Length: 153
Length: 153
Image 1 (spheres, rainbow over the protein chains, first blue to last red):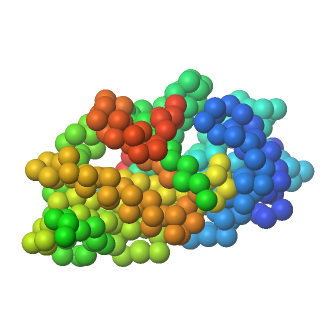
Image 2 (tube, each protein chain N blue to C red; image 1 turned 30 degrees about the horizontal axis):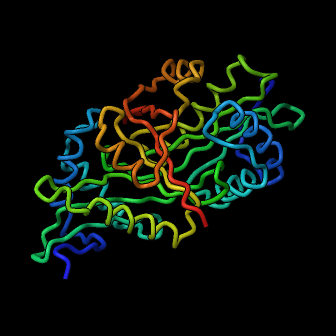
């Protein structure tokens, strides 16, 4: 029996998930930690299960130790649905046990079952361990860089 | 009276839009031109108007000379809806007349009216004119680079 199970997130997981995002966003200099915002965003993903999923890795005790999200988009390049993967993070105390791979694999499977022809994600160019993690799992790097516009109220 | 109008795309515009995407994808080395795929993807965006929009610049004759798409996502960083902007392209014969700015401005307005707290897009790092275009219009560059996974059938 495996020590951790992959599972769909539940509303009661939201505080634990916001803690994980705080770990992730402290690595990614483009994003700031703001628990209220993170919980609001996570809840919106949970509330629209036809448009995306939020998967968690859970210890036998129930504790959430990892997460990933996938949202569906249309890609005109691929000519169909594509999956936007975000927020893959594993609690630092349980890294290097294959949980990231398992979460990513389950997210891809969820997307393929809903017709995804392609998946994309963005990673900080300076986060070499993330880039290496993804390329070893079939992702190819690109020359596309992300730009943001904070539209204000 | 302005020479060009910004308008929502219609199904009969799809062939013209696929021509514009062919122009765009021939600039962006990450993507390949495939008209059937492009028309399929564009039609899916038109068919889900609650999830995104496809705006066009149209000459008085009705000819489509530019386009942009925006799709809604949830951003856990922003804590709400964000707008994913793609496929902004202007026919080469009518560039430098402000049509790109007008399309982008209308796309942002469409998104803001639907609660977008943030917008993002990706641009080829080697496409300096695109990067300059977007940063002059309020977009900030980031260290986030896009990775793709072509999931296959």
